[in-house]
Amino acid sequence: LSLEEVNALSTDAFTRYFAGVLEHSPQYAQAAAAQRPFRSVEDVADAFRAAVQADTESAQLGLIRAHPDLAGKAALAGELTAESAHEQASAGLDRLSPEEFAEFGRLNAAYHEKFDLPYVVCVRENDKGSIFEGARRRLANTPEQERAAALHEISRIARLRVLDLVAGGDGT
Ligand code: GUN
Image (cartoon, rainbow, N blue to C red; front, side, top):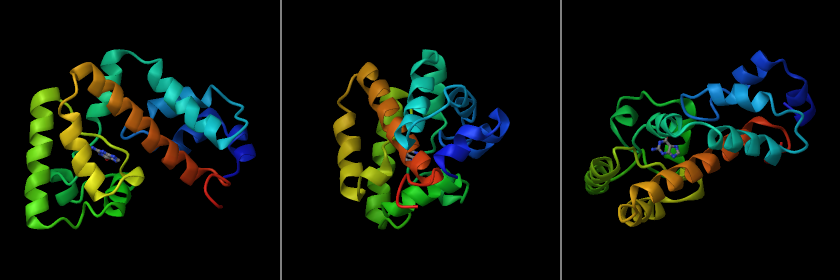
């Protein structure tokens, strides 16, 4: 859809169209709908960031926890959302060697153990090497730093998903 068409959608149609921008969290599409009209695609992405920012800490933790582990059980079982499957494949996380897979499993487990959260990174802005490196580096963060880092990455993921959905966002 064009930006003009996005601005003209009913709240329900907007919420359905952008439901997948934040993983398993369509409620933020409804909040973003109320911030129209948008003047640019970046404005649309900002509305999602603002909706998350304005939410409670416990809802923010829920949003982080709505993300599946990268190269995790849901990925192996083919249970990812289309968006997540596409993103994980773009960085080759669906084609790890057995050694890489085992190492990533250890990093995911250490991350869950320390933060009680899944490790979330904007996969499309990274490659396999920087995703591994980020997991090791972020394990040194405090829980407060890590919640902020996860929400920042989620806003980057959401932005790229918005660019895919609005004509003119990336070459359409
Ligand atoms: N980064 C981009 N998509 C995802 C996802 O689905 N899960 C996690 N953990 N990180 C992501």
